[in-house]
Length: 253
Image (cartoon, rainbow, N blue to C red):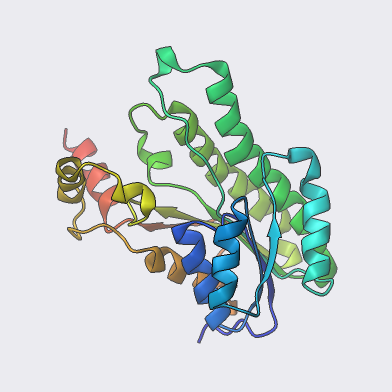
C-alpha cells in the first residue's frame, strides 16, 4: 500500500489538471501537501476540495527566489521536507528558424533551470532527514522530438539527464530522483485540440485513448512512496504505449 502518512510534499504546477490529480492522490494517501502555482483562484478551488492542504502562490520563473520559496514552503509544512513533485512548466512553440532567442531561453529557464533549482534546494532539506523523493514530470516528446518544439523537447530531455546525475549524487543519502514521462493526457489544453487532429493522435497510441490525469498521479504516488525505494534515476513512461510504438516504427522505417 502506498502510505504517505505524515510525509511532507511540495507539488508545483498544482493549479493545472495533472497537478490537481497529483494533489488528490497524495492527499488520499495521507501526505501533508503544500500546493503551489501561479493561479491563486485555481489553488483556492483545490483547497475547497482538500481543506487540509496548504497553498503558496509562486512563479517558478523567479529563479532567484526559489531558495526562499523552498524555505517558506518547508516551514509551512512544519519544518521538514520528504518529497517534491516538479510538475510546473510551459510551452512556447515555433519552428526553429522562426523561434526567437527569448522563446528558446524562457522555456529552458522555466522548465529546466527552475526544476534544477527546486531540486537543489529541496535536496538540502532532505539531507537533514536522511531521505527524500523527487519526482520530475517530463514528456514523451522529450524522447521522440516534436515539430515546433525544439525548446520544449530540449528542456524535457535535459530534465531526464539531470535527474540521472542527481540520482547518482544522492542515492547513498537515501534520496530518490526519478521522472515520469506523460504522453497525451486529457487536460484543458488537449480539450482545445481539433477533433480530427485528436483522432490522428489517438491512432498512434496502442491503448487507443488519451491518458487521464489520474494515470500520471498514480505513477507519482508510487514514486513518492516507500515502495519505490530501490528505483533511482529512472523514467516511467505513461503514454499508453505511444513511445514504444514510435520506437518500433522508427526502427522499422
